[in-house]
Image (cartoon, rainbow, N blue to C red):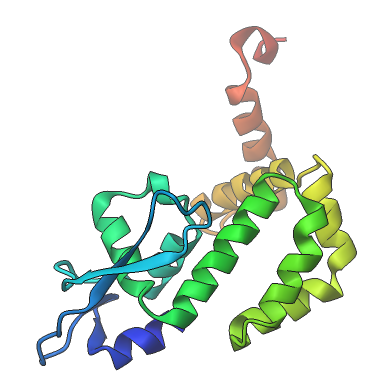
Length: 194
């Protein structure tokens, strides 16, 4: 959705980044939330062009999910620029609500958020919401319970890294020794000597 809007505004993807097309960009407004609005609803300001080239689509989506206070000034300007599109603004507000819902473990607000997504008239968000609705019990458990499969994923990532460094040479026995050696070398000295 972000990419289609940017292309319609005259931006082209070149070498993984968006830059202005050959025609000069007309003045476009930036949007910033006012201080007295806790919801962060946009307020159009004086029209100014974006000075820096836009990042890749993946980075632009990353901007939509980040805490606004953690962004640099250039990233905040970029975010304000892409939030000018009403559909992207709706997607931004829903994404921020979902991030806060997950971080603050507010499972009671999940149904309301899913209904807002389904009624957003944005096909990508409607599909996302219907996919979450199919697994609603697992989503509730992920929000409510303190358990995580993060440690397991970390061990799998470490094992794959060791396998990649071997370039698929050697047997399972050699891989086993390397894994056990890497675990023992990460232990404190008094534990690895015993």
